[in-house]
Image (cartoon, rainbow, N blue to C red; front, side, top):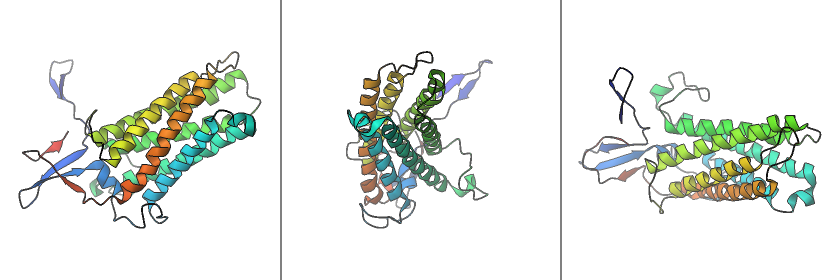
Length: 280
């Protein structure tokens, strides 16, 4: 993509690299895909549904538990049955599962980087701005930390209206934005662009569900706006409904991570491209 700077010169803006086409020695063109490489760095161990020695299995399980807790917390009538404190504790514990799973996802992305991008062999604090998966997992991790703050402080029963606005609603809104950005980047990575139709791909369904879930969380954050003067929630019912929708989407996406981890693929897929090159 070309644009012009203030001096009128062409400036090339590179799209994120999500796949690379290569020509094999037999002349056949194959495609190396970013997400597949990250998710299949080592041969899958264990079964689809039980593999406690596999990091990918734990990512799926932890995300599923966190999503389930968020779904339970937003079910109509649960807050009345569990009490206000019990409801907020449910959300807080769920956010901790989200953070743990996001941390493992970020580690997964860091470990998938070429050696040249990580010469010091660091495993966490790395800077790889040209990698879309580094951004997606990193932004998601930041979002979960904001959810930790929001749900943690929501357990305090005597917060003032101003404090609830600043320390409960605002971190929730920021976390929701982070989730939306992260899900959009993950969707772009799988689709190799902003749109694609791949209903036979686990990755496609996972990222689509996560994107829908993130949109629902965003709507929930808007509906859950806390007035800094009165402390009133703008639309608590809609906030709970959208949280439930988002959590269910995340839950299904997390479960699909399990068969994605063990799907029998080689890591290279045939492509009809006539010439090899880097894309998109």
